[in-house]
Amino acid sequence: MAENKRNSKRIPQLGLIMSEISPRILKSTRHSKIAGNFGEALLLYWLSKHGFECATLDHTGIDLIARNPHNDEVMGISVKSRTRSAGTEEEAINIPNEQFEKAKKACQAFKCVPYFALVADTADLIYVFVISMSHLLELFPVGARVCSWKMTQKALLQYGADPEIKVFALHSETRSWWTTEGPNQAMELTPGRRTTQLSDD
Image (cartoon, rainbow, N blue to C red; front, side, top):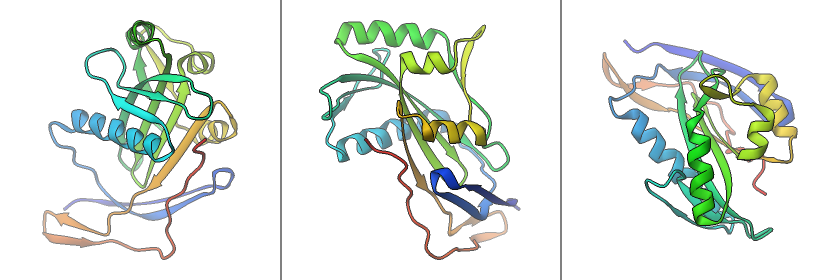
C-alpha cells in the first residue's frame, strides 16, 4: 500500500502554510524527461501570462527565450526541474558546471542574457525561481562538479527577500488517487486552499 505522510510547514515571510497528507511518489521510468518538459511549459505559460513574448528552443544550450516587457531585456533561460517526495523537499538542486558554459555560448549566439529557472515540485508546493546566471553564481559559486541551489527553509526565506530572484509557487493537492489496494485513496482536504503567488515582476 502506498504510504501517506503528513507535511506541516510554516513560512510566514512568504505567506505559505502547508499541512496535508501527501501520497508517496512512485516515479515513472521517463519521469526526469517529463518533469523537464513540465517545468519548461509551466514557466513558458507564466511568462506569457505576464506579457513576456517567449518561445522554446531545442538543443541550443538554453530552453526558453523571452523578452521582458518591463525593461526589454532578452532572456535566454535554462530550466532545471526536480521532483521531491515527502521528506526530501530540502534537497538541493544540483546544476552541472558544464551547463553554465553551454548557456553562456547559446546566449552569445542569440544575443540574450543568460538566466536559470529552478523548478522544484516539493510534494505540495511547486516552486519556480528565476534568476540571472551571474547572480546565481554570486550566491552559489560552482563546486568541483556542480553548483547547488539550496532548498532549505532558511534559503527559501532569503530568496523571497532578494529582489533579483523572481519566485512564484503553485499549491498542489492530491484529492483522490489510485493505491495498490483499490482505485481511490481519500485525502484529507483543507478548505480555503489557494494558489500562492510570491512574485511575478
